Image: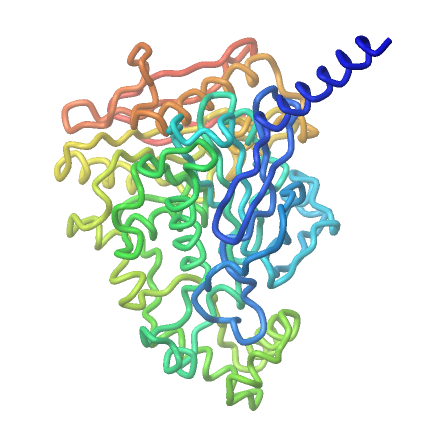
Length: 472
């Protein structure tokens, strides 16, 4: 009996030790942390890791500050709050598409990131890292929307996925002369982008604890997230931190994003604040997000002047537009992937071609162009803006759409291309060269689609690409 009890206790201890090894306690900026096992064997998720101090109170409209240390071991099992924003209308197109709900908390305390890794506590693994930046027009969205739930899939492909939340709208991009005066750099407004830079630096400093390679960080994003990718690649503040970049539905060369000079932005905001008699930083910081939203609406109605909250050219984080910086050959000299969807908000064919041509002329690093042409099943909206997110993250389980075997296959091809690009700067990885770089001699786009019978995925490298010919 004693022997049986002894064997049982040894078995329990070995089991606990095994669990401890697979989900170790890590030491990162702020303190100790542990994650949670996911349904995918070997993949650990870390949700809601603070990468900066909460930007509230006196820290509103300031550069992100160092993480506030915590006591004990933080269990990272819950997402952090999403940035303050207006809740999607559940009856709107995207509200229905993403099944948006009011259950996600929106607050100013939003500087958190999420990590999925198959190599927690194994710094020698040096796995590639992908930092995801969500879109939403710099005014809405969050890192863990259902269509972006791809951490387990990416980690199972050997890439550590990091999702980043950043300040939005009036909390993330409000500029004012008084804010510039109190800034050590004499600028204001790009707080959301500064959050992204802080997250990138956090990854550089901490990702080895999760098994990642701090010298192999890819950034990728869609829509405003793609605009953010372009801004980071153009910014002197992120110089040397980025090894590859993917820009999805963010346009290419000869676009004006970002294009608002700091003086223009801050004087427009000052005029609005003066209109309501808010002339001190104390008064402005006392306003709630809802106050700011209502004031902007009332001000526009009364003056016919619209106040925009988006990235600005401030001479600190951004010295010029992305296009001008690229033309000056001052963006990050790294491999790029760039593309858009067939029914996107704008036909980006020429701007993407122009960017790829410029890179082919100025750099030996490859650039890959693509068109996502698959019209999503279930309605007649085609390959609409953001439709590719279901495929990039293989997150169909959250969607109402009747996806086919061809969709499943296409998604796995795309995940393979994207994760190979994170690993090698080449979407083909070490396999056959299905996707060739865009060059002056071979200006090719990769077309990503499903055969008309919807039974298998369809890919073709199309030379002399003339633009999307979407089918519905």
